[in-house]
Image (tube, rainbow, N blue to C red; front, side):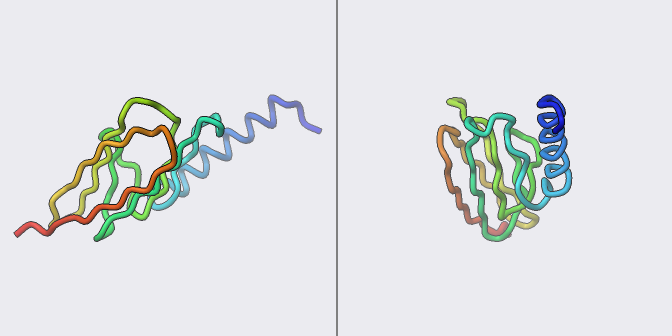
Length: 105
């Protein structure tokens, strides 16, 4: 049986690999402490890029996992030919956020 430190290291490596493989179009890597994790289920029509606090997190539909916090996150949805929509979410619990982007003329 491997030492506990090696098991924890391997778990962190698997989470990092999952982020690299899935981050651009699926679930984003979970926070280190699962007990503090909050799940944000993000959807838009049409599908769009999602920025969280100004950083590209992926495309909708997107499940973003983050650390539970009282500070709000800035969630921006953007798609070509549509007006961007920005919402502020306080990540104290699991949430679902759906937006409709309006076409710009």
